[in-house]
Each structure stands twice: as C-alpha cells, then as structure tokens.
Image (cartoon, rainbow, N blue to C red; front, side, top):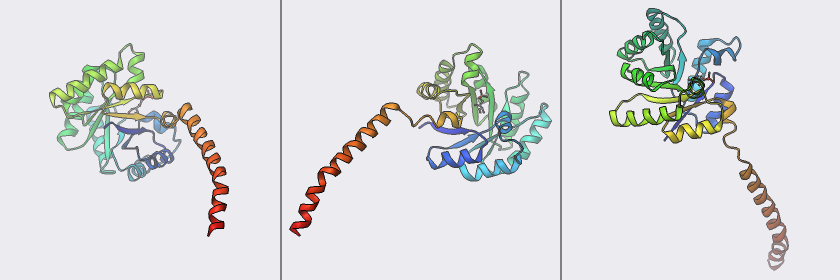
Length: 231
Ligand code: E4P
C-alpha cells in the first residue's frame, strides 16, 4: 500500500491530517520552514515527530562533506524518527554523506532528484529513501511518470530497499498519476491533500441522500403515531 507523507513543517497541519488516519510521515526542507516564520527549528522538529509517529525528514543545509556529516549526525540525535535529507550534489558529495551516514546506522532521504540515474545512485549509496521531484523534473523536460515506473520495477527486480518518495506535487491529479505509476510514498502539501476527499458528484449524491432521508422521516411520522396508539 502506498504511504502518504505530509510535505509541511506546520504542526497544526500535521495534527489535522494525523486525525484523518492517512499520515505515515513528514518531509520538510528550507523553503517549507521559511513559511513557518521564526519558529524554534529543533523544537518544531521534535513536536512534529511526537505527533506523526513516523519518519520525519529534516534537510541538511551545509556544503562540505564534513559539515554535512556533522549536521546530519546532530539532527539524528533529536528524535529516533528523524531522517536526514541530503541533496544530490552534482559533484557526488551528497552520495559520500549518505554512504557514511548509512554505515553509522543513520537513516537518510536523498533529495532534489530529477532523473532515474540519480535515484539509482542514491539507492546504491544506501539511502533509506530516494526523492523524485515530480513537477520540477517535468519542468526540466523529464517524464516523471516514466521515471517512477522504471524505478518501481528496478527496485522490485533488483531487491533494492530504498523507498521512492515522490514530491513536488502541485495537483491531486499528480498524486493519482504517481501512485498508478508505482510510487512507494507520496509527499503531499496540505493544500493539495485537503482537496483530495472532495468530489462534486459525491457532494451531490450526499445531498440527494439527505433529501431522501428527510422524506423518509416525514413518511414515518403517522406510522410512529399509530404504533403509539396501539400501545
Ligand atoms: C520533498 O521532499 C520536497 O519537500 C518537496 O516536495 C519539494 O517540492 P517543491 O519545492 O517543488 O514544492
């Protein structure tokens, strides 16, 4: 079954969607935290971990292997569910970081990926999760649906354990296409997730049923009176 992660750092949103019973984890990044204003970074991460009870990806921000490793090791001490997000740097440094953190038993999510080759390298380096940016890949001229299909069958056939997270979602239709193509996990912004239960025809049908029920109750009234008289 596909897993659903919330692509947010809002505690209110995490609390709300956790009540829906559909939230398996959370992913964050620098832009997502920017939307939260001046919150205490560490406290917010821990608070989210305590609500969602699943993996919570926290992105590293440094630019050298040593600094990235130190940052990742530090975040990993904050909560057992923290997963270290490491970007796919073009010079291979991100792969070095993922490989080393994996050796130390720290879970990673290799991120900002646009191609099948990047996903394969990240999984070879030992990433727990590999993140494909659906719409950003599309904007770069790639075919994200095809990449998802290829990675899903590659993972199945090769026994590779890295789970594919599909992010950069802009519409509910993106979600449906990515899941149908074989995404293991979808990370979805709250604005999109909130639209997913809604369907115009479902609303019309519910209204029709409500009206039928009102008519049924109105018809039952004399019958109820009759029963009362017999007693
Ligand atoms: C995934 O982990 C990222 O947080 C996210 O989906 C990035 O997408 P966007 O910046 O294109 O919205």
